[in-house]
Image: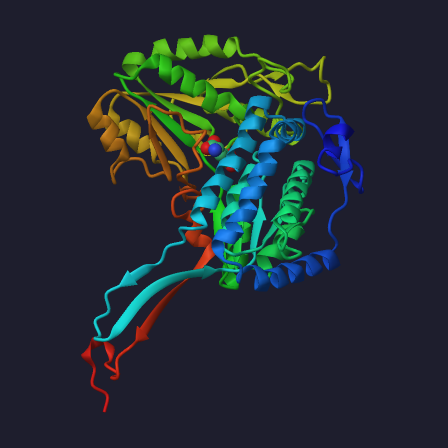
Length: 493
Ligand code: UN1
C-alpha cells in the first residue's frame, strides 16, 4: 500500500480516522478530518482563488485541465488500483473509472473554447442583445464511495474550465483515492504555472462537513452525489440561501425485455449492469421486466450465469464481483432480501461468500429475486446486487410499471421492434434521465448529460450542456443608437 501511495506523494497514516479496504477488511491508512477552523480557511481560500481564476481566459483554464488529463493518463494504473483497493470494485472498473476522468478532461479542454453564448434579435433599432456565460463561483463537490474519483472529475473538469474553483468533500469511506487525485491536480497545477492557491481543495470529514458547504453562501454551486435521503437533507439547506444544487441521487433502474429481444445481448447487458461494481452503481440494474414469451428462457440463462460468476479479490484477473463496501451494506442487502421474501419473492443467491478467505470482508452472491409484483421493497433502492425479476404480458403494462417508482435515473429496453423502441424513448415513454435501447442502464459515456428525474434529484453532470449549471447566465443589451427606445413600444414622456 505504501509504495502505491508514495507514487502520489501521500502517506497512509495521517490522522485518527481509519480507512479500511473492503477487499479484506484490513486497515490501509488513517486520515485526519478538517476542523471547523480549517473548513473556514479553505472556504476563504476558494473565494480568493475565484477572484483570480475567473479572469484567466477559458482556453488557458482548459490548459490546466489538459495537464490534469495527462497526469491521469500517466497514473491510470496506480489510481485505478487504489480505487480498487479502497472501494472494492474490480480492477477493470477501477481503471474504467480513471478513464472516465481522462475522458471528461478531454471533453472539458474542447469545451474551454466553446462556452458559447447567443446573439438575440433585439426588437429595438440600434440595439444588440446577447446572452453570455460567466463563472458562477466556487463549486462544492460532495461525492460518494461508489465512484470515489470519477464524479469529482465530471464536476471539477467542467467547473475549472468554466472559471470556478472546486472544493471537494469525498466520501469518508474513500479518502485516499481523493487525496491521490488531489495530488495529481497539484502536479498539473505546478506544470501549468499560475494557478491560484486554493483552486482545488479537499475537505475531509463527515456529514457536518458537507452541511457546512451546503450552508455557506460563498459557495453558489453544490454538486452532491449520494442517497435520496442525503439529497433530501441537503437540498433545502442550499435552497434556503438560494444556492444551486446539482443532485445525483438514488436510482432504481430497470430493463424491459420484449419478445423480439436478442436474448444473448440482453443477458450480457443484465450481468454487467446488475452485478458490476457489486450492484453499487447509481445506474445498477435493479428491476427486470421480462415478457412472458421469453421469461423462462431468460431467467434460466441468468440463473446459470449467476451460478458461474467469479466472486473474489477484485484485484485478481477474471474476478467479476468484488466485495460490498462494508458490513452496513451487507446488512442492508440482507434486510432487503428478508423483506422481498416476505413480499412473495423467490430468491436465488444473496448469501455471504468467501467468509473463510476474507472473514472481515463482505462478499456476497448476487441475488436474483422473482417477484409476484412490484412490491414495496422493489420500489426502494437497495445499494447491493439484488435483481428483482417480474413477468410482463404487454408493452404498456411493462412501461407503466417501469415508471411507477419514485426514482428516475436510468432505463433501457431490449427489443428489435422499432415501434417499441421509439415508444420507450417518446414523451410518454421512459421518465428517466437516461434511456437506452439494446444497451444496459449502466456504464454511460461522459459525452451525454448524466443524471435523472424525480427522486434522483434532477441534476445533470458531465457532457452535453451540463456546463451551464457551473456558470451564471447574463442577458446583456447594448444601445449603439442615439435614441432611447423602450421595449414593448412604451412611450414614457
Ligand atoms: C454512479 O454510480 O454514481 O453510467 C455513476 C455509469 C457510470 C457512472 C455511474 N458512468 O454507470
